[in-house]
Length: 214
Figure 1: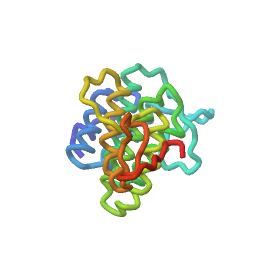
Figure 2 (figure 1 turned 90 degrees about the horizontal axis):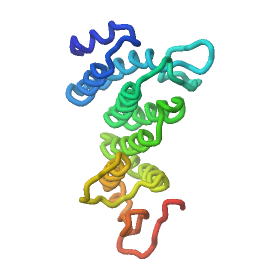
Figure 3 (figure 1 turned 30 degrees about the vertical axis):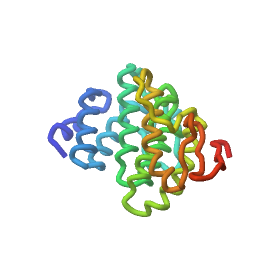
Figure 4 (figure 1 turned 90 degrees about the vertical axis):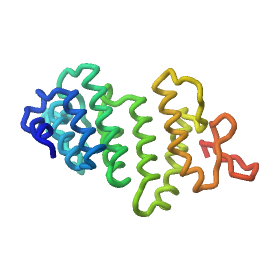
């Protein structure tokens, strides 16, 4: 771990500069391939961001089997909330295997309350899980099979399987574009192709249509 990251770990969690934190986190998990160093930074940062809803104000624990619900530990600026969301979705995307990715996703989707959790970040995490599934080093066929469930969820949430060359004006449109690209290996494995509008999955060389709600 770099000295700059170690310096963050020595700070009180509530005193950490969010921009410095996210820079060090992304450097660790993307450039240095040190996922567990990034996780250590994230766990420390969470102590200044989250608390449980019960009076104990317990520090967040990703591995707590009771899976308590968390809310803001203090007032957070919009930038601090965005950085927390980006940190979480990045850890899902760059997790060393799908099981670790799912644990971080479950933590965010089940245990974290709004406004720290929002719909846009939920969709990004969904795409990040699919990315992790398609890049699994072991049991890849198993994860490609399971990945179809996440594609269905994405379609149910309004994402589309068609990529477009028109300018993308919103975060939702950019996420939908990533969804379409990330889903391609999963569709290929199942011999499916997007419908003309990208809202359905069609069996290749057949007229049978597999709708997202079946």
